[in-house]
Image 1 (cartoon, rainbow, N blue to C red):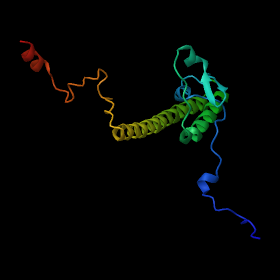
Image 2 (image 1 turned 90 degrees about the vertical axis):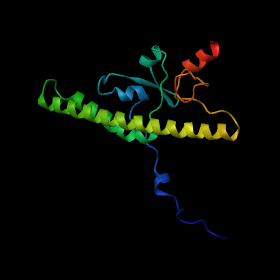
Image 3 (image 1 turned 180 degrees about the vertical axis):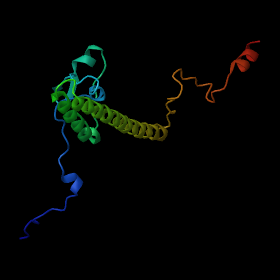
Image 4 (image 1 turned 60 degrees about the horizontal axis):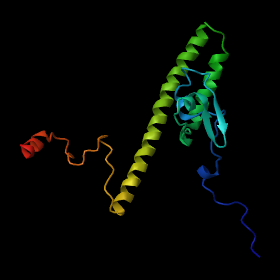
Length: 162
């Protein structure tokens, strides 16, 4: 009989538990945390849903997993700044620090979301190409198929109609 190994070889990154938010927060509320720290999201199942954006009929998106530690740090800083007495130099400095960290967090989370969207768009393009489907035009919202080069076609249409 072979005894199971005493220790399995598990990659250190996969051995770590994923980060969890210290309180529920959707992506939109996380971007406005420094402006309005009273924003409250409610946890429904495994998603955060906020009443503010739900009343505006806008969807709530989860914070990307890579940005959760930064958001937790930002939430702790906001809580610490709010705990300080009002109109003191310490609170003013804390609010300035929170504002700077909010800007850093927002730019980081937007970059992560943009990278994920770009990756998914590339996957969709490959699948459409493999199935002989035309590419999705994302550049022009009017989706002018006959004007792909972006040039003016009024002269061509005018000559044809004359």
